[in-house]
Length: 463
Image 1 (cartoon, rainbow, N blue to C red):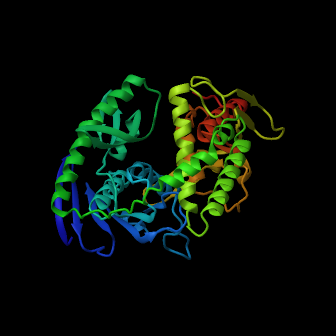
Image 2: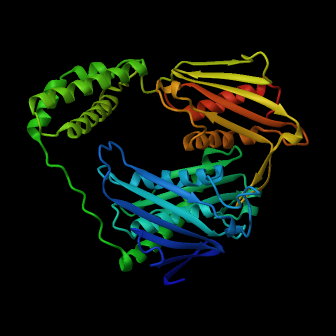
Image 3: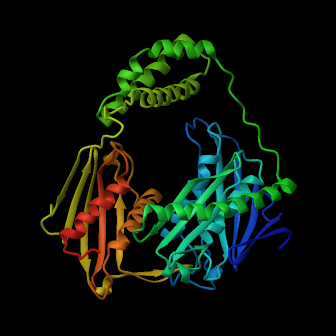
């Protein structure tokens, strides 16, 4: 287009990265092309820290454009893109998971990544192209970030691994894995795995990782060469001055209160008491040092003390907050056929995590019709996941499924698809809805278990 182009032979096709000034007001931007699929990715950081943020405010958007596939879609009266499709949300979450761990903990500026698919060739998935673009855009910006990332997709057809398989090859593959990796001390370390497929051995997964690593290294080295020429100096993050006197005062106030508060089996009681102790600590410090504005420092230090205490006790004493041993599972309970008028239901309980799945069988005509940038077709198996506020003891508006619910629903769906019989053997449409009744860790995996119970309760001949 209007910039410097860099090329790398990656698998059977050529990867092109172009740096230009077309999106010149972004902190960093690039065009990444693989085959004839082209994605524009931008990275922008706000000028100032987000006030009062006790987390890193990162947002990732993946934008599908119908014109990229030569389509005019949407409502008959509104022929344009609207809210992101489920597939777009899954891609955005994929990018987020890979890049988020590489930001410094003390970065509190809002950062937004936008990956826009401008051209799609019906062979190469834009998801890993957008993720490569996010790595390039961040590394080529002033935003503090420990990159670059290498990103590849690995398939397996007839026991042979394939790098970045096309859609056609993925249909024949018994694996569909995405690996993201970083380089540390000349080694490529995997920092994100996303995948689905048929049941395979652990050895096969290890071999897939080993197959991916040299290609990840290729991509990392390729990006490093770009940044030698065009990289920008990173922003210097202000390190708040150490206040040893205040830290000593905080530790003195906490004494053994923190350990007594943190170590109890009930999640809600533990959270309530930890929050109450934090409020007492902030009040104590503000009374002792009025007008110093140390509230945020105190909260941050309190959270670090929790992390330190939990980490030390796990490593040294093999002690967990809910009193379990390191190799001890939470109590598990399973039930099926709970609801009187549904086609199938299953309840899976693991400690304070409780998932209820309800299955409905429909006629072949009840399939979901798919129409999007990448997909036109039908879907006869659906899994939907609901995470209402009460399951975490919270009060918030219910506005329909959010990104997390869509992502977790799809995660469980990918795990369940290999169990579903083909339409010749079982022609019904299947919809499963999982209601999370109580959450204390890994509700997505609990959804897989409760959904499996519902499938068996409904008489579906699972594989």
